[in-house]
Length: 428
Image (cartoon, rainbow, N blue to C red; front, side):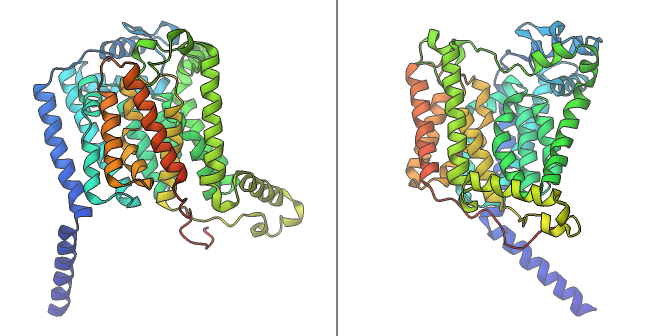
């Protein structure tokens, strides 16, 4: 008995020693602690910036007052343009904080730290960055401001997106899709992740699993929107999912160098949409589905498996109707998701300052997926941060930002594609 206790004690001591000697494990905890202190100091000493908070609270008050017509839910910055999940989240925030800014800042500070913890867990799971490069995730003045000095709904959206990504890399696909749908219900920018996510789902699950996961995600949207769909369906759908909005040229961070008449034109929007789709198809064919023989071969294999599954001749032996499903590597999942979103960021007609949170946490990962030298990676990171802190943006800063984005995209294109699967064994 004593020998067993001594053995357990020695094993625990060895494990503890291993943890504390491994910078890949101890450094993230140090980063979270340091950033928690920094967040506390920002809340205490940096003045809050009034932008959308009052508008959010006005829209929530209308909702809590019984208004279900989206065209009547307005604030001082305009009408409500977010899906129903936004109202539930900010109604809860109003209940907890009483609508006051300071307690809301504390709440968003906690949100920031939780989000940082999740994204660090994703980075550690992929093991793409060296341990010291994780510190880059703390070095954005703009992102700290977005969370605790502006209180934007983008913060909750990205927290849920990162939680969804963490679930997926641990092969919890249905849970990940439900959380992903929750993120979409707060702000639609998360749909930029949808095309790469669909490809990953088709790789990791059979058609039945894909349909059931998508059905779960759709059910979340329906349940959250039900009070509005029952009362004023057209008003809700047209305003909460308005894909034709034209943003003000002055606030554009990425295309300020484009003359305003061109910026607001339909032809410019269509050109960017074509570029977006073209880049997605190119990366899907030559990078994401490379080991499956390209996008067309991959889609063809899925169609064949569906036909076999539905064929009466194979109904007696269900295994004949299944593709050989494999477990996807965490690195392949994260790379595909981050690159797909990054393509959407490059082709977005207008990026406002809070939109930086849509992809900031993926920048270090994307930089280390290129084959660029470390010094160039760090310079690219600094350059992007510089562009996002120029206020108001100008022709130079926006042109520079676009160039930096293209340099990263070229590095991702020219980098080798990792093998996507953990093993060649079938999964149940």
